[in-house]
Length: 282
Image 1: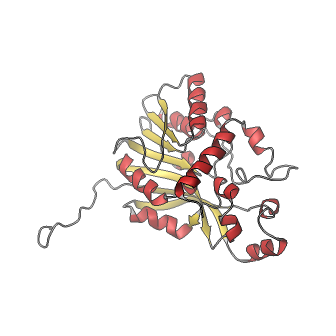
Image 2 (image 1 turned 90 degrees about the vertical axis):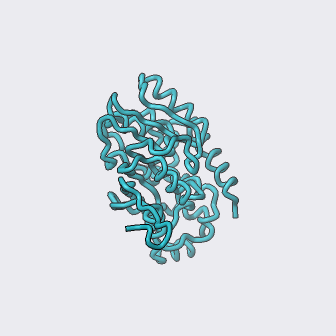
Image 3 (image 1 turned 60 degrees about the horizontal axis):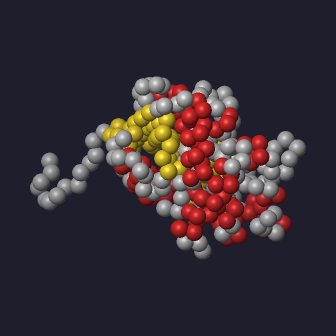
């Protein structure tokens, strides 16, 4: 079993490699028209091309949803994008928040930060900023963001509870998030859970759907809803790298589901404070 630091280093290495490639190269080995998948990174990506503010150069095809489509971003909002990659969701968020707003992208991988900053500079986006940092401990002051978005990133983080606590800290009272992630219903086979490529590809790091939702509620968020729920099918040629034919058959019959969900929740305007002693609270 890998330690949390080992998992983080694995993610850093894999996504540094991806940052140096374009989307076509990343997807050339993935399931598509006439092609066979030998990598897991892009089996879940959604189509961004119809969204306002989309810039193809910033899209590496690494997401599992369209959180900015559901994020209810308003003009003038401060938006934070967790795991901002080459800037794809950040630039769409910028279109929504306009010149009077601000977008802060946070990413763990220096190569991704460099690529995102280059993309922003080429387009003259002065109100988009990219900060390198660990989203378990964000380089952002408390009560900063009106909206937080993230696309297929929390499943890469070992301590998901810490990230959700940080989201709560960084959001303004009354702020909200819209986050797309991979979740499970049922247990993945051990070989997949322990596979480095499957972790870096967002599948092995996923947790149970109910646990994911309970973490959100347990950290104080309200008005939670699932904005989108999409089944993810892992192709046989990926499964065959880790499982025998019999094991693949057993996995398919096990009822285990892998899904991309987009979850919305709000930070309350007024936080409930615990009673200090008997009789002190009305």
